[in-house]
Length: 288
Ligand SMILES: [Zn+2]
Ligand SMILES: [Zn+2]
Image (cartoon, rainbow, N blue to C red; front, top):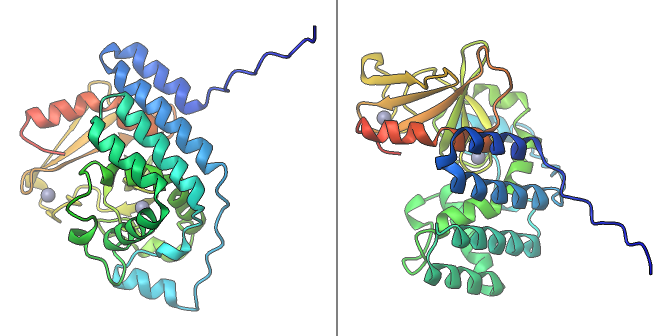
């Protein structure tokens, strides 16, 4: 009989440990936390296989893009390995289905799509081009009418490990210090969360690539309303989070308040820990 070593348990990441704590504090969020732990795990495993891209631009190109308000990452810049992307697509779709965030028909359609490279590749290319604030972008043409509505969300999750690498490689460049638009300078997607820095600046967080950029501390990124009296801002009871509700377009944005915080922002944790704030915002008449 040979002594086979036990398979080592998967090392808990900082995200996972914090997410378990959220579940302990808020048992009503158990299912959302469990789903997030699985999504984060897929993202981490796929992203570990994606090389940090070396994106080179001609002299002056990036400055011109920033000035024109065009996002920097073109589809061809993404270090996309299609077999890894298909795996990412399938695994994310499986998780959403298992946690009942997706119905069976949509799940089957997305799995079929993941197996059909001839259909998938042009669809993803078109979806990214249409939504990335590039030269030829048109968000209305992102997906064909026959695509399931949830495909947008699944593409966001499946492409995230690849785009996050692009944001990681590019956004430290000084050209982006001048970017204060309402959408992401790397991939052109809209913000999904924000962080208030210890210096009281506000940075928006991209809902697709997790990139960050500086933005007005109060103005609404969804409609541009900057009138203080028409922004309603309130904090969570423990002071860790803040919500900005726009009284013009009625959308809201959540933020992690890193002033006096014990740890830095953890997007995967903080978006879930603030689910009770979504309920509070919706109760006040705002919509996500
Ligand atoms: Zn982005
Ligand atoms: Zn607004």
